[in-house]
Amino acid sequence: MQSSFRPPFNQIINILLITNFFLILCIKNVNSSLIEFNIDENVVFTQSALMDGPGKLTKLGKGEFALTYNEANTFMGGTEIQDGTVSVSNSDSLSTGLVKFDSTNGTPALKTLACVDIQNTIDISDCTAILIATAPTTLSGLLSTTTASILNVTGGQEANFIGDQSTAFKVVVSGEATRVPIGDNFKEGTTFTYGEGTIISSHVHYIPYQIFIG
Image (cartoon, rainbow, N blue to C red):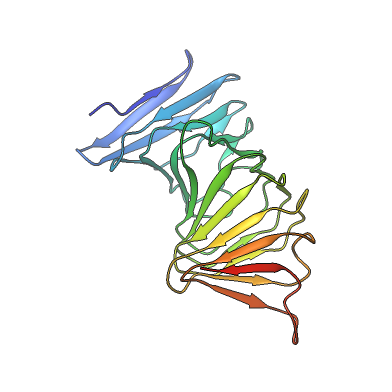
């Protein structure tokens, strides 16, 4: 197993449990640089206590980092997802900083484990990102987008987008029972590709966006 994390010098790590599939961490004092999690496929790292400090969390590798601490995290440097999945169990799991997706060398995904309202600014500029809504999910912060942005929505639950977006972009809805309500909450010119999921229009007589059914 090659999964690893690289703490900065003053990082305090308390390893509570490790098995072939799970690593549960107590993390404090993320310093002013960053902490990187490089997690192999089919491996889950689980956070069990507060993540605090001015530093930045970067997710690498195809595995999953589950932020399951049941209160708000308070690290201030934001989150960058370059590959694999970051899972959240409450609306404040990602603290208040920017959440940036970078698909240059991977497939970054954000998964919701419980009903959440994520108010962070989420940056999917010029990349392909995945939202896995395994529970009802609301994104109410700014969605920083470009016309090259693609957001794949899956997971089998409803994903509501009530925050503003920078530009029109592309939404791909897939997975049985996945639902994305649309109305005036998306920029004009946004396109939707429909797979096994459902697009729900709040307009009674028409859907004001381009939709591809495939």
